[in-house]
Image (tube, rainbow, N blue to C red):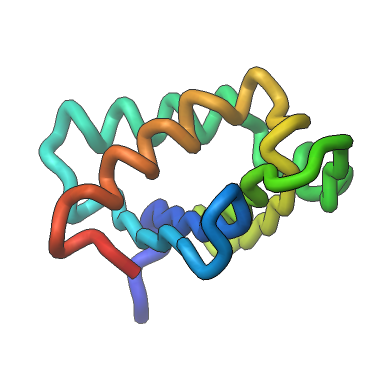
Amino acid sequence: MAELGLSVSLRRSGGLLPGQVLETFVREEDLEPGRAKELREMVAAADPEALASRSPIRGPGADMYQYEVVVDTEGRRSRIVVAGSTVPPELRPLIGFLEQEASIPDRKG
């Protein structure tokens, strides 16, 4: 049976340069213990199920990024789509973490 750990993916599209897409996929088990703990805490603080129920979260502004965050944890999947101008404060740290992870070559989607 597959293990039901935490995994999170990010897809950032839009912005001033069309075609500039950032993608990453992070599994808790692939991270150093401290980073894994940080990821789990950010996911808990973001409350992905509640955000997914409000998704898509749209806002004003041309040339803004759009974020798609998918959280898989304990057999549940939450998909959040949000405009860059309306990223909820509780989601910002998680997006920042994932953008940072995307800069690591083996984490790119």
